[in-house]
Image (tube, rainbow, N blue to C red; front, side, top):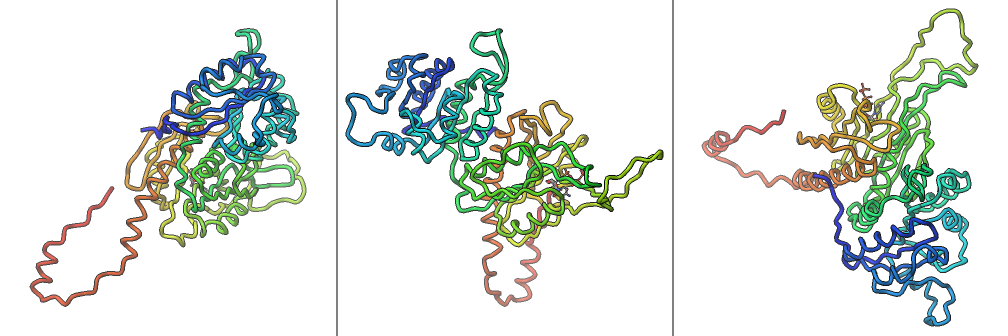
Length: 444
Ligand code: CTP
């Protein structure tokens, strides 16, 4: 069963910003989806936004006035941009134009929406929509990096047609209203059930040097681990992320440690693991390193080459286990016998859950936005998930982790309870007791 977020948004308060892009026509339908789910939606439009869709459209859907101006002729006395900012639980801008994203990155406040956003300190989501050349522009990408680092969630535009179907295609079109609704509903309804807990995540690849120019590494991008860190943050956890070299921005709102080698990753994990309640080991750690690292570039010769290597430490198998309540999750990357090999890793590395996947399967593994995984728990239950986005996979893993956490706590409490005082038994009652003892259940 997929861990679907609740679609009931009764009384949840949402600010919907509409800026000037053709995708604004889709925002009317998006707005209706939120209203249908029971949310209260306050729409704020920029002047350019009103050129594409009339405020009356949104007023009719929301049964509320649409705000468009910072200084309207008739206005309430209070500073209403701060009032609107403190009313909403989440601010979504859909569509978010390149111009508006640039304003957010610079902290400009030259219209009502940008002024509200400068005072808004809760969940902020952008659904960018623009021509694919504007999206690819370095300035836009830098602005996106800036706002992402400040905690904005970006609903990345998929590849597809621009304004006129068939004319021009690329990355830049706004996500479909149903997808935006789904993401926002999830953000609004994710339970803060890991509040007060520490989650340690490892992500990405490690690199082992052979000489100053050559390294041994793998194709991991860090996306799966970053999605786990983001999801744990949404559940209210205090997240520590230990990651290897990556081209992807680590998520905002987590404590990130960048490392390069397996040994560095091991040191960082050993330091953080004792305080962690949940450990999610998604990193693709190099199993070998070069025995000798040359300080000079190694020259080629006429001969073939064998280079001696040593095993690196298995960080997961050697985790310091000081907290009995800890939940430990490992990944198993297997190109054959997935279930069998993943189960072996679960037992050998003493895990609560192992996430198995096959990088050769289409849409799975390194460098893809999606993954198809199998969740195998220590009680032997196996759950195969369909092909999902890495964020959705992370959601399922966190859901399973929270369930395992709740299952483990009563077991630990039982073990902690002092044994009842021993009563002296007569020989016959002791014999009767031993005769009644049932054999312990074992699981294969
Ligand atoms: N892992 C680790 N340290 C290593 C190797 C792996 O902590 N030196 C962790 C990974 O982060 C992952 C799990 O162990 O959670 C399994 O990793 P995987 O590469 O699938 O398996 P290995 O144990 O390396 O075994 P093999 O490569 O033989 O399949």
